[in-house]
Image 1: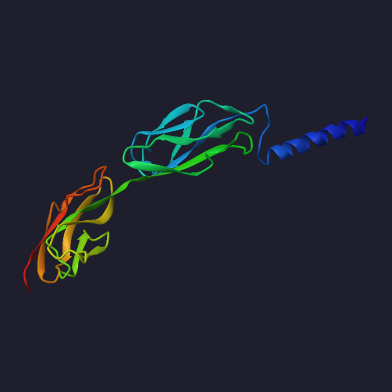
Image 2 (image 1 turned 180 degrees about the vertical axis):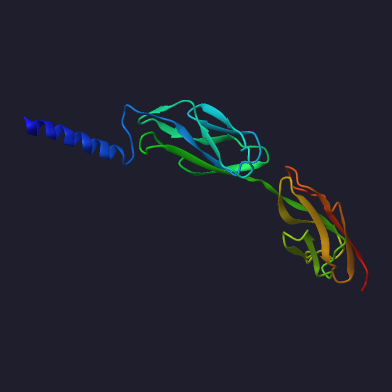
Amino acid sequence: MKFSLIRPAAMLAMALGLASCGGGSDDESYTVAGTVQGLQYSGLVLTNNGEDITVAPPAKAGDDVTFAFSRKLEYGDTYNVTVKTRPDHQSCEILAGNADTAGRLATINARFRCAVIPYAVGGTITGLTKDNTGLVLANGSTTGTLTIAAADTNTTGTAFPYELAAIPFGQTYSVAVITQPKGARCTVANPTGTMGDAAVTNVNVTCVQTGA
């Protein structure tokens, strides 16, 4: 009689030990939750199995944001959390844990990371011939420099496009001539501004031949 009581107790202890190592049982429910890094602007909508939730930016800039879907899953249900609508001015990527089967892990933690979208600053360069070597442009002092070379066939000073740098939304830019080219002098039109949600294409450089 004493042996028959000890054996069930040992089996129960073993089952509890296995449950604590991860996974779950078919009588549990699971919350689909997670975190978003780098969220700065509103508009982010996540979706899972037809349920959508809106994730707001954190109260303190730079903090991660937590989220949780209201609809719970049963053991064995699948989930796949994806970005339905990206936030204003940002793109978001999946880091880990967004898709699996409920119960395989003790908790569900879908992780995302968002970043402000950068756009190119550029325009056209006019009046530069293939002999006017050495033109160097820069945006402020933080994005490096760009050495411009006219095409070999450009012997008449016609316009050609250029792109200087990628600037995130909301940041300012200031394009300047760092080094004048040989035999010409160049000036910049529309050199400064604040980056919007599209590439800047009107920072135009005009070069005039000096003969020097």
